[in-house]
Amino acid sequence: MRHKLLHRIGARQHRERITAKRTFGTMAAAGTAAYLRSRESQEGMFRVLAKLRRALRAERSRSLAGRWSYDLNRHLGLLSAYKGELAALRASQRKA
Image (cartoon, rainbow, N blue to C red; front, side, top):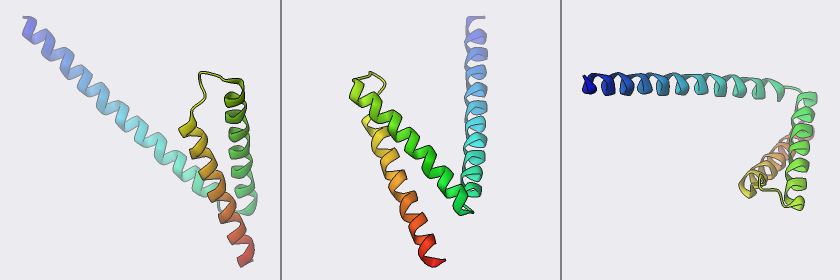
């Protein structure tokens, strides 16, 4: 009896894990598609840069305030993404 119960619990946890992975994959794909659509125009690129700028400002303020939620890796990732988007915008302006 106990063995059957443990088997059922294990099977349910396995199904939940698979569902979570599928859900995350769907969300990631939707986010990627939205990001690519937003980069199709210069206005969209400006919006992406503005969002990254706001996120960087918030991360810097967390750092300066000594907040426990500050994450150096997130800060560096945001900075890298911002620089990459800025370089892409400049390259697209040179082509035009």
